[in-house]
Each structure stands twice: as structure tokens, then as C-alpha cells.
Length: 480
Image (cartoon, rainbow, N blue to C red; front, side, top):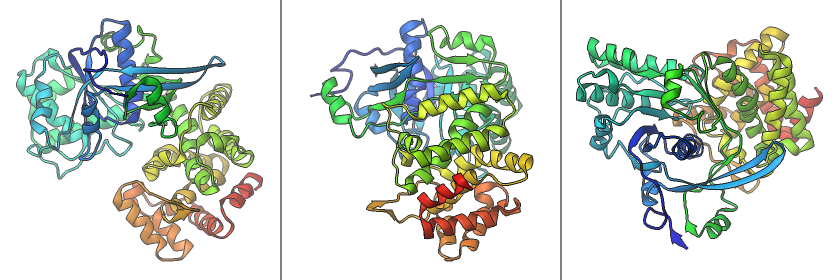
């Protein structure tokens, strides 16, 4: 079996035009695939430089393979089974700004650079008042980006044609607007001056976006079989569904520079991405976030298993159609069709989407994806949505750690959040556990104990999960 690199396989290498914050599965299976299609089908002809947004990451693995990898897309397209494998060659190199800060800043000196794209998780777009312009690098993504923008401004003396087009892909509403607010805070904190401020606002564009593709990631169970079939020792295989959607709130001149539509991609440049965002986050990501901890504690391992299990499937439909769908303001027939399409995507027979992979950063995900629906449901119906509340109780239970059968529960989140939840569990009292977690403003930005009835309901579910087991609790919610 051959090693995968640019000496063993024919691959394109175009001028570097895109800086990408993030080197993980989603960006490689979504954005980089779209760029590959633009290179193949239009005159875009650009390469991506992947920047590792945190100190630990995958740049060494990427560079070892000259940033080449295969993408496997599986699913149903118009009722037809589709399975494709494609070598993606758009990443030219990968940088770690924590050890290569000078190389990182030099990206701003490249006159061909035009786009910045990011996906640094829901927690990635945040301002840190402790960051300094002289840090190598600043701690968070917005700080690193501000350093890069300022260096570009100085390098090209504020040239109007050297601004960046920036597409944040973090799954928060108004991701571009939030990123602009962070950058403005850094400009003020670091006293970068009025000239830079004007250049940023007049000649850089930061646009709200919505991304949609389920990416299970590395196909552990079939990786050896895929490598044998390919004939290459690809350690960066990534798997995704056929469906894709990228909504970008930007004018047509931006679309002309980023010709994804001409390449046949489902990339929409629209006046407002809000209705697309609300629909997708509520009816796809919202169910994902609650079905994952419940499904895992129920004894299931994949999204498809959850949907196809009679009891869990009924629970998921209850959450989607009875609890989340009524909180949206789009036409009901449109929402129902989208929800049914989501269920078909969850049932994708080719993709094993592990529920544990969705459990990364579950508290920030629940805050952005499910908490708004919980509040709206309470406001409109006068009661709490049992399925969503059970989902939060399941997350709290999962974060306790321990084991499910012979499997150790590995919690992945902000250490401060993990510690706070486990300290609450140490009290041994379900009401104190619920009260402590719901009161944590570091997690929620507010005290959720102020939501009428929520503390009591969470405490009750925590107790029931421990004493009856998740299977019985889910049955009670369905029939309750």
C-alpha cells in the first residue's frame, strides 16, 4: 500500500487564496470539497492554507500527507443510493500559529489571499480581554484574525483591494455579526487606530452564514477496507452525507468572486440567512443535541439506531414535531417537509453517525440549539417541553462520567464546565445538582432556575434516570 502524498498521487496545487481556521472533519468534508468543485468546474483555481485554531490539532497529520485526503460521500439522492470517493487536494499546507506564528502572519503578506473561512465550534467566536496584540498568538480565533488583519493593513498600507472576504461557519446565529463585534473590541483594546477601523469596515466583508451537512468523520469500522480499495495509506479519511447547503448573507459581487453556484454547489447568496438558520438549527441540530445523550444512555450508539428504534424513534418525532416545530414561524407545511427530510437524513443507511461524536461541547450546543425552543414552547404552551428537558437532564447525567456497561464515558468540553457539573454531582442531592448546573452563568449567561418549573423537572428526571434507567424514562415521556 502506498503512502499518500504529492509524490505518489497526481494532485493540483494552485495559488493560495483562502485562509481556513480549522482543520477538522467538517471543514475538510464541506468547505474544502466545495473549493475542490470550484477548482474543477470554474476558473477559481485556488488553494487553502489550514490554520490550527487551538494549540492541539491535526496539522502534523495533514502535512505528513501533503494535506491530501479522500472524502467519502454516502446517501440517498432522489431515492437513488450514492457512494462516491474523491481525492481532495485543495489544502496546500497546514500551519500551527502556536509554533509558527511568523509563518502565520506572513499569510497576510500574500497579495493573492482573498478569503478567510472558519469553523471553531460554537464557543470559538468570543472576545478575551486578556489577549494582547503582541501575543504569539492571541488565545481565541477573533484575536488571531484581528492580528492577521492588522498585519495585512500595515503590509499593504491600507490598500482598498487587499481586504478579506470572511465567511465564519460557526453554528451560531449571526456568526458574522458576532465576529465583527469581537474584532471591534480588539481594535479598541489594542488601540489600532481610526485608519485601520475604516479599512476593516470599508474594505473587508464579514458575512453571516449557515452550513448544513452531516459529517460523521473518520470511518473507523471500514477504514482498513477503504484504504485497501484505494491502495493508499490515507489516515485522514473523512465521511459525509450527500446533502449539503451553505447559505451566505452577502451581495452578488461576493458570489461572483466565490463561484460555488457556477460549480453546481448548493451555495445560496441571500439577503438574509435568518429563516434558513432558524429552521436548520431547530429541526436538525436541536434533535441531534438531545437524542445523543438520551440515545447513548438508552444503550444505542448511532443516530440511525436511535431513529429506527421504536421507542427512541417515537421520542425523536415527539421532540421534532410536537416540541420544536411549533416554536418556529415559517409555514407549517414547509417545516413539516423539512423535518421529514431531516429524519430521512438521520436514517442514512451508509453513515454511522456516532452519538458520542455529537456530544462534544454539549452544553454550548444545548444553549444555542434547544434552549430558545424550550423558552418559546413554555411561552406559547404554558408548560415545559418534556423531551427537551429530558435532553438537558441526560446531558447533565452524561457529564457525571463513569461507565455505560463496559464503555467508559469520556466527556469533552470546557474543563470549567466539566468540573462545575461534576462538583454538583458530588453533592449527591438531585435538587442541588439541578440547581447548581442551572445557576451556572458561565455556561448559560443567565440563571436558568428562573425558568418556572425547570429546576424541579430536571431534578426529577435526574433521579428517574438513576433509579429507573433511561429506557423507562423515555417511555414515560412519550406516553406522558
